[in-house]
Image (cartoon, rainbow over all chains, first blue to last red; front, side, top):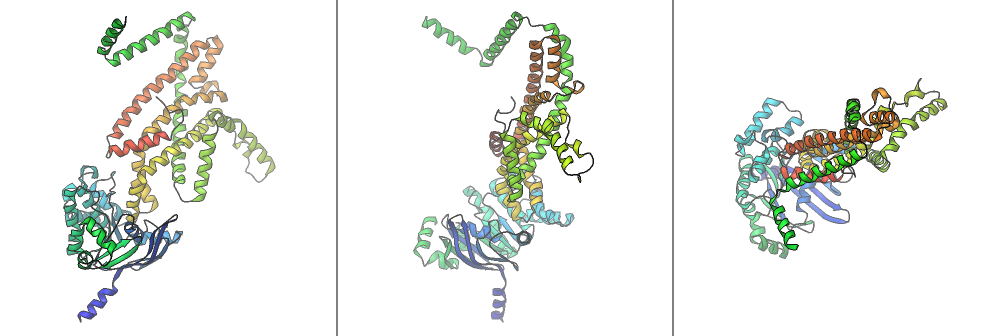
Length: 259
Length: 300
């Protein structure tokens, strides 16, 4: 019985990356990446800067167009390469299933906190009363219900990043992408953001792909980790395997530097 | 000797800088007044004719406002085309900017006013399927041709201002809008343009001030006496009474006054906008946008 459950779980792949390549001009940043992320799974991606970890994340929702390879999110399967008109519409459909949180928060400074969260659902044409109620619930979840009417510039970095998480959740995505969510924060503010991210996993069983150097968070929350090196996944496994007993010298050297 | 000089410098240092500047200005005006008097400057003539010349302000302002509105529309379209991946739009906008920045404004005015009408005539002669009255369609009156030329010319310069303004916010903000699944139009209308407008308003004010002065060029097209703007009016009365000195000084004073007033308003506007949500960002972007403007540096 539990084997059957396991099989069902294993089949429920939310993000499937196959043969991903990405080059900027002559620079090959991603050189063949395959990765499956199952529903409810938290995958932490780490590696040196320039190893391609952020680029992989940005390829998942086509902020960067993959040069080659296939991305599949929530059953929408798209090839890399040139964007045709038809593909543009499909990309937009795919993005509605993906929430993204950026290193620099990228909140819209011309809107209030609440409007930031409401922006995407409104643009997708969802009804107003229900959407507003949900947006307030999300702000409450990240502990910022009282800041709804403020403008982002009045909030601290940690608060801004929590609003950005609420904004990304507003479309009820199947997967959340975090691109170094705490790297731009003062050290004393990283905790509040990481703890909100942790509750997404524990309370909502949210599927997450997280690019981060926070090994404490990885150890505690991640189901799986992937170490990126020169555009490829060099090593993949549970946090215990990768942090305690990395198989490759590069992984070991990197961990020695950040831990 | 050097002792006295030293004491004078120390004494001067105690006088406020602004006061000294004021004295310099007063002296300059005094010298000008003396020279004017020596040259037989007829103050009474200016008193008699200033009201008439000032009456042209109405037309000057109408031309400048219509011109800047046209320029803003063209600049917005041009800027969006310059950042798009559509080769047709990019190509057309590039041609537009290159031509109108690469040729003198006065040439463009004459092209519209005197060179277009024969084009309409010849085309109507050659192609009989063209609608009735096409031979007259490209005949513009002087003020209209001048206004359109101003709009086209300034629109080309402002395309670059708008482009850098949009690009200054487009990066991370555009990515965030994309990631939320917003369409191109939603992204531009709700996220990018509202922020870009804050950035481009001050340099657009500079362009408007510069354009007010360039409206004087319209008088070369020979606008009718009834709708003559400031410069044309001063030309007309100056020539009639052989009072060229007085007439052109009067015209210069009107433009100068106008520029001072609008530069003041512009500075206040800039301050208000700079107080916005992200001061450093707005300031940096305004600086970048300003560098893209008129080569003569706009107003002020």
